[in-house]
Length: 313
Image (cartoon, rainbow, N blue to C red; front, side):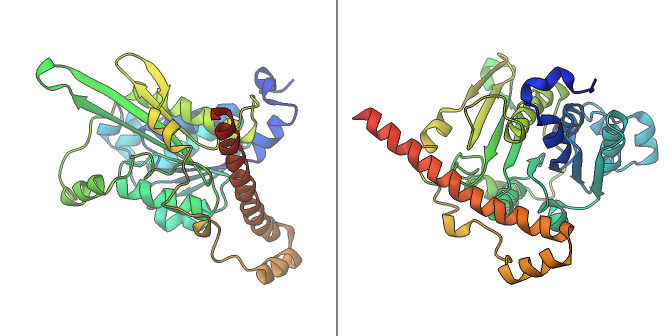
């Protein structure tokens, strides 16, 4: 009997696939602490954790796995996540990098999926570009609390986006805008933080984990090239954002096909790597497979558009 028997509907090979999958978590704060916990329970066997921050008192209202002792010791968030993952699955392989994600690019480039838990709009934009260049599916999470003005009260809302070649990017979907980037630059270094609470983080993280697992061990025939799931924390509803449905029929203008693929790839180096050993060959082979996959996704998207156009006629 396997500890993953209750999720056998994911397929006969799902345990092996999940165990061999490497998922990168860029940012190990509130949202991605839920993601780390759930992915470990789901059987994902390899993690790359990146965050430069230590756990503090203000994190305790939402950081899964964090304790008072961690605050007193000044434990790094990546170490809190590693401890939690290994407590669930002692056989998991967990690599931690206490740094900005931009300084851990080589490690993140080996991931099969990357899940972002970043507050900065600029960082989201850069990570989306990084993942598209390397043909790595990127799942972005974001939540905020909005004051409702004269009506009183607050709106808790958030979204989860799956971005990869063949689907709308964060700029297409309005997650990243020039206005948001400019405002963030103006407020750079300002004191204070945005409101964050544990329960909407948990909802968004569960949606992100579902998208990640669907990429690795799909339980339904409908394959998602992308997604934009919008969560209204006041009503408890999750819906596919109308903007995604409109944008999914268009070609992403921010990352054309020529902007996809590892610019450092050299077939001559690939041959040398293959001759040197399986481990190095696997890395280059995964990048080559990613490039081929992006072309197949692009063809599939075009086929869907042609079918929709025929249906309209």
